[in-house]
Image (tube, rainbow, N blue to C red; front, top):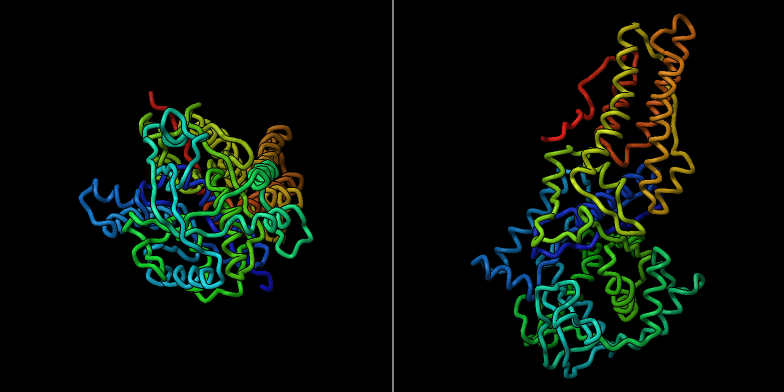
Length: 474
């Protein structure tokens, strides 16, 4: 395992419990981690929770809890749900971890001593919901566009500022020039264009501290202020490496994020790293959003889909398949429980499940003994789709094999064949099922393993239905 890969999800803000947005990023990161492990690469895969800031303190107050009690409770909902989805992360980081706080302080102290942090007065608009400053031009009816029920607050205070503007020319060159020593990739291309346009339009320095937010990491040289929650959160990727003594995995190969946090991950993070004399990530991939039955997902509409909802309805691998096949890599994707049910029944119950059931039943009925074994590798087209974040295209490629096999069984009337013709046909279908299961290992690992074990021979017998059909509730 010479090649090392460091893959990250965002750390999720603990003002809310896990929903399908968090789930899609984390499931897909796990698929990528598993895929690269199958290629023989050494992977370090992290996720976690972001636990400081005004919004968390406010949510804790509303529940009558201390911020630490509140974050302990909500962080647990994340750390406990991911293993239920067979998400095999290597480390779960919390920003309330004392080791993380120490590393944040050390890194900022270094940037301060390098002369890239200064004190100045800030006046502007702040959205507590986003935990970020916004411009007058972004305000809609007095509110942040992402939080239309929450008025933005006017703030005026003395803060510590990071010289973000100083690094803009370097960042532009690093993004545009693939041969630049600091080059990093922003994907998809549309997101790269968006970042470059904003950088070229002019960027102000960044306020990195708060005078009126007590729930945070104290600024190391000024205990009257706390570190801006986003700066604290971004440094988690570095602190996870340091805490686990995984320095040989640095820098990150992939930060997989949602598009709403692209600026932080594709600009602010890299500028901080340059200022701290640290290597930049190789790639930032910002995916789009889910809508639910044509509407934005929101608590007020009551259309939030939780991972628990999905697990109860579709099981572990059913959920993983539905997430991967609908993942909004390049465009927003519209989902809903009814759509998921239809896809589950069509692809998993009627498609894969039916193929496995038919061939295993014919094996048992005929007393067929299977002796030979084949070694498989991932198909080049399949690999290309995964590495391009086109997960649905990778799965469509596999399902074409599945649908073709089911069709051929009917065309040749396999159940009517006799003698050597029957044995040869059956063996070819067994190989095909093995190849299908091999390719599905990163996506639906539990089911893929069951299929491979069921068809390893010498005797092949039917098992319980892999994906029992879901009947629509009347």
